[in-house]
Length: 79
Length: 180
Image (cartoon, rainbow over all chains, first blue to last red; front, side, top):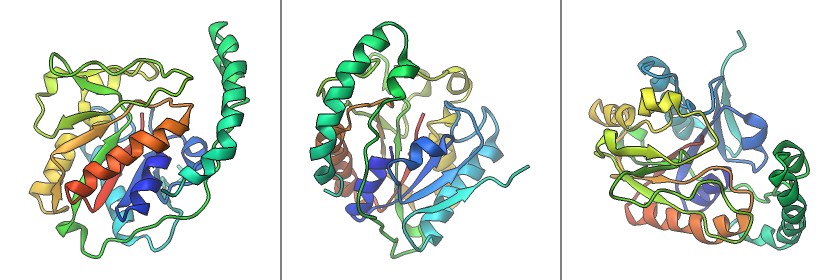
């Protein structure tokens, strides 16, 4: 998925990738990432957790709007 | 394209690894096989900025959830091969009948998405963001891939350019990528 993000950016399309496995997603160096502590298969959020799903998407959208350089990352705060 | 130039040296390493990995995987030793996987190294830092607020921008969605539409589309191939087969794409309309979506991806737990498709295919949440003006609009078609593509060469040469071309043709300005 990181490679898809890179190609889209190269074509002028801004991207944000959500990841629950930072070492894997970072290996190919995506331009913008939102790292979340969620499960594979529920990368956007838990079932029926509308607020959690919106949080992930809002972070991705904000990163597209606000990031100023390649490699921008937003992570969940440590609990 | 940015990463195609990096394939030359990598592909021979991959071919060597694939031969090594096939026998291990057939013995159920996938973890051992992938511990030696030659990770693809990228060069360059492609980065695009929107020239407008997100509230005016057109968004596209890409997922590796391995979805297809029952009775309308061929199911996606299951486990990826180690050969040069081109990774498939399925195009899922925003207004798809959710009950007809099937997951062909064998390598993640489907229990979350079966309960709520928005866990990894957030069509409803993004439609809400269009309705409330958070984002300008959505491409009417989501691009669906299968995860687990060890051979990135046909992905980079064939599949990804198809996604880029489709989004460009639809005037997509920003893309959200959701792996599974």
